[in-house]
Image 1 (cartoon, rainbow, N blue to C red):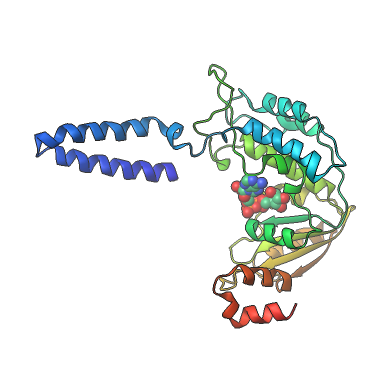
Image 2: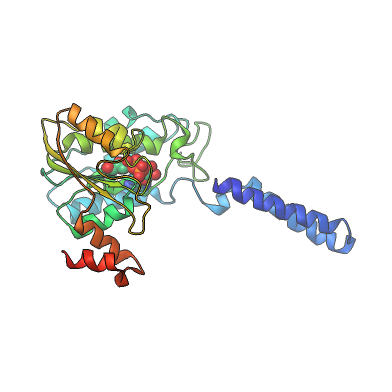
Length: 307
Ligand code: APR
């Protein structure tokens, strides 16, 4: 989308410059030069803009995070970071970009076993930034990003090059969007990480959903398509759903309105016990704190004082 928009903007600029050249020959030489520069920018896509290719220095970032995780975050655990990176490369480098399956990552995930304490699992959908604040405030929650793979690959982008290409095997100029193909290298890794995370879930688990969007519970999202199906009613005591809306709305979905009723139906059918709230005071207070105008409004005052 960004690429298309910027390409259209540049095309317009080129047209305007070309129009100027038709009347003043002395200006036309300069204008042709500038036009050529614009065209070069278009033909030399992300190399210069560096927008959506593999994250630069990915190897150093991933390895650094791996050592940081086992040294500082979770010192009781020990992992072979070098071998994890080697298996990651083996899965990703050189298959055509859209040809990395969940199975390709199995050897890498085999090196990252992790046992999690029950009652701490936090799942979410369409609430990423609120989930981060929530997990930071209530420190007993654990999210996918607290696992080793989640921690190592958080916010990174990667894709491989075709075999003929040289260099380190990663495409540093452009990678497709997650939605572009079924076997997307980034999507496949998150699928596997999310599946493992949900399979481990036990005790009381929490799901944070966004009541200000249509389809707060979406069967095609990572939560709806991978994590929900990987939860076990034998391991999970309660699924505690928390629906949260923007303070000033829109108020589209709630526990008994919209797609969340579908989620509850699926949970019941599979034998899970569940609770659902759309008035969680901690979440409302958190939103207030983050809202620039909020401290003066009645809603915020109420939600802050009732805690
Ligand atoms: N790094 C970068 N982007 C991410 C990450 C991450 N760690 N996690 C999610 N994203 C982006 C992806 O673009 C993804 O498509 O956020 C989007 C989340 O989409 P939503 O529809 O909001 O949520 P959902 O698809 O349900 O995924 C969230 O899966 O990531 C796991 O455990 C997590 O329960 C959570 C669920």
